[in-house]
Length: 270
Ligand SMILES: C[S@@+](CC[C@H](N)C(=O)[O-])C[C@H]1O[C@@H](n2cnc3c(N)ncnc32)[C@H](O)[C@@H]1O
Image (cartoon, rainbow, N blue to C red; front, side):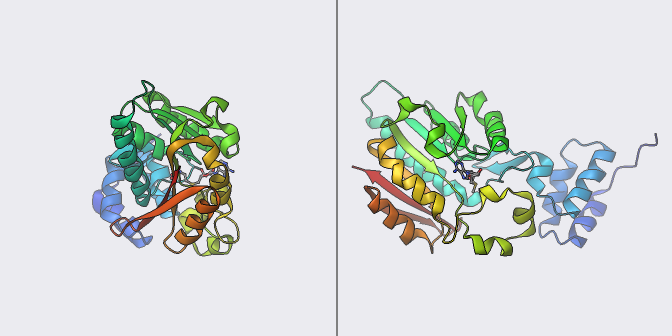
C-alpha cells in the first residue's frame, strides 16, 4: 500500500484556517508533534476540519499545566475550571496545615467527567484522599485513566449515590463542575460542544441549576463541619447558586477570575 507523503506545516495550517480554526498555527503544531504517521496525520487533520474537538483528536487537554486524558464522548475540561481547582487547593492547603487528625483530607470531585478537577487537586496538594464520580460510564472510564495512577478512586452513579457510604459527614472539600447550561441555550453553543459532548454533561435544566440544586441539597450531610462545597457557575447564575447554598445550610461567598472568565461559589458548612 502506498504511504502518503506527510502534510507540511503550511498545508496543515492552511486546511485548518480554511475550516475556520481561530488558532490554526498552534493547533497545527500540536497535531504535527503528536507522533502520528502520515496517514494518521491526514485523518487527524480531516477530523479537525470536520469539527471534532482538538482534544478528542489528541486524546488530552491541557488543564492546570497537566495533560488530562480526554476520550471521545467525554466533556473537555475548560481552562475556566482551573479557578475551581485553585480555590479548592487554597482551602486544602489550610486544612492540611491545620489538621490534627492523622488521616488525609478527603476530596470529592462530583460530576467528574474526565476527572480533571480531582487530578489537578491530587497533583497540586499531595497527600489527599481523592474520590471522583460520574453518572456516565464513558466519563468514569476516562477519569480512571487520569486518577487511578495517582491513587484516586472513581465511582459510577447518580451524584452522591455513587460514593462509599463511609465518606458521609467526612468530606473536607466537594469540588463540583456540574452541568449548568440552561436547556434553551444548548442550541446556541459552539458546534464542538453541541455535537461532540454528551447532553448529560451540558444540560442543567430550565434555569441551568437543576443538578446544582441537587448537589447543594445533600452537601451538608456529606461535608464534615468546617468543610466546603465549591461549585463552578456563571456570573449571572451565581446569586441563584448562593441562595440554594443558604437553603442547604451553607454559608456562601463568590470567587471570580476575570483572567479565566470564571465564577465559583464556595459554601462552608458550619
Ligand atoms: C460540565 S461536565 C464537567 C466535567 C468535569 N467536572 C470538568 O470540569 O471537566 C458535567 C459532568 O457531570 C456529569 N453528570 C451529569 N449529571 C450527573 C448526575 N446526575 N450524577 C453524576 N454525574 C452527572 C456528566 O456526565 C458530566 O461528565
